[in-house]
Length: 147
Image (cartoon, rainbow, N blue to C red; front, side, top):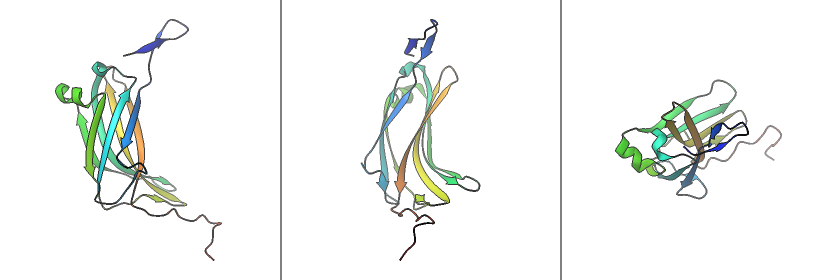
């Protein structure tokens, strides 16, 4: 793994970075359409990667209990397949009909692509990239009233 020397002579590991390219610049997808992703893992030597997980999921934020649903999940740990998926990979996922992304006052529903990298050292690194499913407009705040 590439690293840099800290002031005390200890080699410090570089922080990984996952760049994700969506096939739609606005990152807004209609239900039942296909999501196409290309990612590039930077700051990591491919030989130190033990596994990669690629997933598409939704989660809620806000008051009350937070929910999470995994729509698609793939773990790549076979060395031959891993060599093809790191440091650059692509995948395509047909999206479901619900839940739609929602920017509410009390609760928000978010969709994201998650790329998780597992290292031989036992460490892992997670990168999430948000997108919208559906075109539901944001909710109006309590001070915004319809006339």
